[in-house]
Image (cartoon, rainbow, N blue to C red; front, side):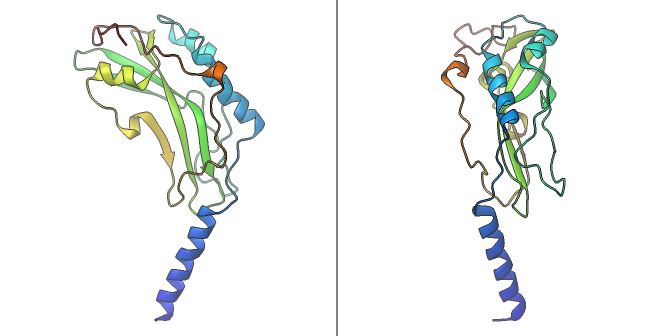
Amino acid sequence: MRADVIAFVAIIGLLSVACAGGGRGRLDPEAKDHLDRNRAALDRLEYGMTAEAAGAIMGHTPIVPPWVNAWKIGPQRVDNPLDTLEFESPTGDSYRVARYAIELFGNPNCPFVRGEATLRPLIFLEGKLVGWRWSYLESAMQRPLTAEETEFRFGGFCGRAAEESHEPSDSASPRDDQGAPSASNPDTRQ
């Protein structure tokens, strides 16, 4: 075998071991507390709240993600909310969606740093909270949402980096309701 092919195979082998092995990012206790608060805050939301009132319940403190690394690859903090997106339904309703992280995963020690977040939407119509589930927004948009709309991921080459699952506790379990009816989502069974 040629020397350059052998070197390439050796490098790929080392990268695979580095990405699959230990050294995965862990959430620090403060970040875990913020994520727990985000999940618990979902139970305190009420239909018709203003964006300001819902934001006050969810909080605005940035979270230090588990993929933070010395090379400053990827975001070094996750804002609360991560961001806000605008959606226009087929019926002309304009929805504003604030995306909040409820779980964070990442691996700062992989040569190709990877990070991901499980997001939960706060969905506003005419400045009032109408829902906080992706299925509600899909119903309002009358289409499936894309991964870019519902997820946050960056990096590659290193599968899911969650060393420990940070599952919501029973007290912070998501509510069954998905949102109040609106002009573009008249189905009250949601």
